[in-house]
Amino acid sequence: MYDRTQEILDAFLKFEERYSETRKIVNAKFIENEPELHHIFRKTLDGFLILVMENLFGKYDDASEKLIYQLNLTVSYIRTHFVINKLIEDGDLIEAYTLIRKQFEKYTRLEELDNKPIQKLRGKTPNVINLFGEAGKEIYPELSEVAHFGHPRVSEFLSAEAKDGKKGPSIFPTYKESAIICYDRSAYVTLFFSAWLIDFVQENNPKYDRKKDVETFLMLEKMALDCNVIRVKK
Image (cartoon, rainbow, N blue to C red):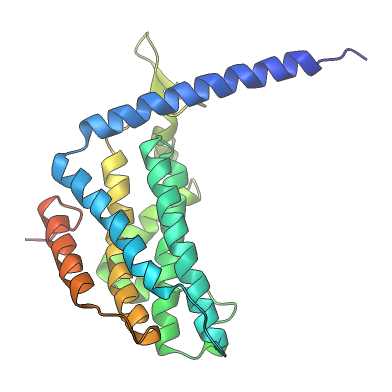
């Protein structure tokens, strides 16, 4: 049998090199086109999450099943937040939207755990639309459409323009102006999560002083309005 080991290895190395190069190009274009206030908001939100989360690290004696569940969801949310950021910066918008959908579900489950016994939530999908109301009816179906590739228009996130002007799917990421909109969807739910996180930390860490974090959150909220992460209907 013909041994294709070297051919396969060469193909992979060539692909990996080009993949890395295109990601660097997309990342540079994202940063170049991101408004200054939006960039400041994005980095401030990232640092804020880490600072608040650090107040949860420690030993929990006789932690209940509910608390362990909430802690794991919280850690998962924050880890996924940074994965989403990287995907958006690198041009992987379909993958980012899919994870943003999961963020809405994680945050919804955290809110549900505050109001319902854990036994009633086991095995049930978080009710995002019930929690977010009109915003949920607008955003969640949009996220689901991308996650499930439910419409041909989702293909636009994969398209790249060739030298002859024609468009087609590309295995390599390309910069899209809509990357900012994708980030805004992520930031929208993360602001809700941040407010919840402050309350959760206060409830579980008696040494926690929330004053500075509340002030920072209110600043972030104003910045989100100023750079249209939060859009108010007129």
